[in-house]
Image (cartoon, rainbow over all chains, first blue to last red):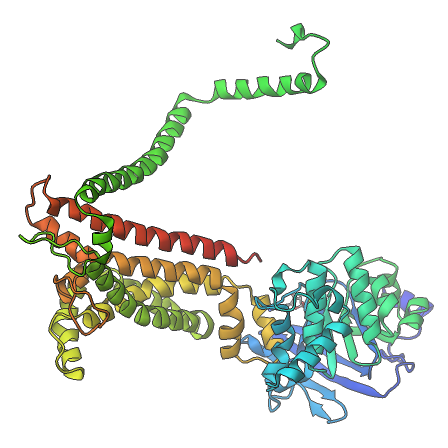
Length: 277
Length: 319
Ligand SMILES: Nc1ncnc2c1ncn2[C@@H]1O[C@H](COP(=O)(O)OP(=O)(O)OP(=O)(O)O)[C@@H](O)[C@H]1O
Ligand SMILES: [Mg+2]
């Protein structure tokens, strides 16, 4: 990890761009010089990177490097707690809105950007009402439209067959994997522009995990997806692009295949080969 | 000990032998004091059960004596309750209606108010304010109920009489309102605990969909806490049904079969306290009627508690 070895085996870090030229548009969102502070704690440091439209981008890196922090900037979750501060811009295309600008309404951003959490968190309501929740928030009251959209979302989330006969039953009676797919259905029912996943499979067994991965794979092309994962194989399987973060900074972003085959930076290679993290 | 074990002994039995000796050895080493304390704790546990059974037994026993003289049909259909009069009537319904109406008025106040306060404290109030309000609310439940009773009669009743002309000084409305105020802290405190126990993750799920704080609190947090909130409501209901001083002072001691809260009426508890204060010979029907009324009160409270238990089990949420 020392500077000399980096210089010998890899491109000069000073002149090599962190975001590889292989990451080309159209972009759905661009993070520009974002700094984030939890009170005094500087959690994101000058992070800049683009997110390709309708593609899956994985955020990887050792625990505490700021993956979740970056993800939660996108739907302004940090606004819920006092003392948090954003600097910089996250530009949402094509409207060119700066998501983290204080002038932008967090509620509007959260309606346009969906999120799936680390642990399944269905509401204590029926399966139907869980999926309809976001639609109702956006003012949909027509029962026919609600029913159609709920069905479409459950189908897209590959959980329709398991739930179609029990839509009015409590969502908390589903298994963990089913609950997580239900949460995905809840997030996509409103057709958000970006979908955020924060380690969506870390609480699930391997079979439920692979079903979620297949599901995310099937959503590619419909949504711009950001997924935080600790699992490098998972990033390799489902992400078109991968970004490695370390201590609040972006180390490197590239096409997943390119990065896994030939990382540009020594730090990336060390991380991918399991030398730290 | 195991050296004499027959080789034909089943394997399981042999395997369990050393374990059993271990237990014995540990038991032998246990200090005498520990075992005495264990025995005392056991007796304390048993005594609480025994006392409950004893009370229920007495109620049933004395009530049986009552029902040898008064038929169940009369008990449930007679419109008058005058067991201490020369021409006695034994219809429990006037007392039941008094209890239900005062309880109903109290709950109409305590449940909504308690719930709103709980939601406000748990979901909206800044931590400093919450820590300030909680002890104040708990002070409300520390006020002796006799004080509440006079508050109802001297302050609330004249007010009610001004707003609803023609209301008598003793009326169930005033008693119910004040009883409701008294119960608010019971409802709000337990409800708030239940709301605060709902994990942040669930709230974030609602916020992430674009919900504001009010919708999150009412549509997501409240349903998730419903099992604990149901316990709070049940406690409030039980307190209202069992409350004696406030109703005895402010609603009057005149049994009155009515559902109109503007009228005065005795509750079951008010009758019991009134009859207990007079000196009725132990074998008189008036004395036995106290137990019959007590048994009815006991059965009402018991069924509400059983219902609450069922509700809690039915809606129990595990996080
Ligand atoms: N609410 C908070 N207040 C203060 N510091 C925080 C808060 N949340 C996170 N941090 C700190 O910010 C840094 C980044 O945290 P973050 O949760 O983004 O890491 P992460 O990359 O998602 O880690 P993990 O893989 O363990 O989930 C960590 O050092 C963490 O301790
Ligand atoms: Mg994280």
